[in-house]
Length: 110
Image (cartoon, rainbow, N blue to C red; front, side, top):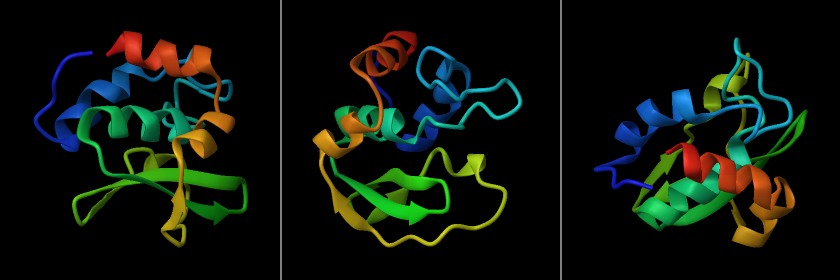
């Protein structure tokens, strides 16, 4: 995985790295769909910080806080605003929502 200067620069690469291999519900018209947990892991790998989660009608949604800034690079999968509870999450929580193969697939595509 290459180095990125900030999460926004990473986001530009993620948009083309997300795939059916990194999410079982991925679609070409909604590439961020189902990528939240694997994405949160990769963001933490690159920038440190915390993994957070919030409840949504579809289940738990994972995102990051780097420094004092919330980064939700997969927010585009939602048709309407979601609440941010900023509940603490662990890498194990996020890994339980994805698979090692999906995590490896996203890392490799970056």
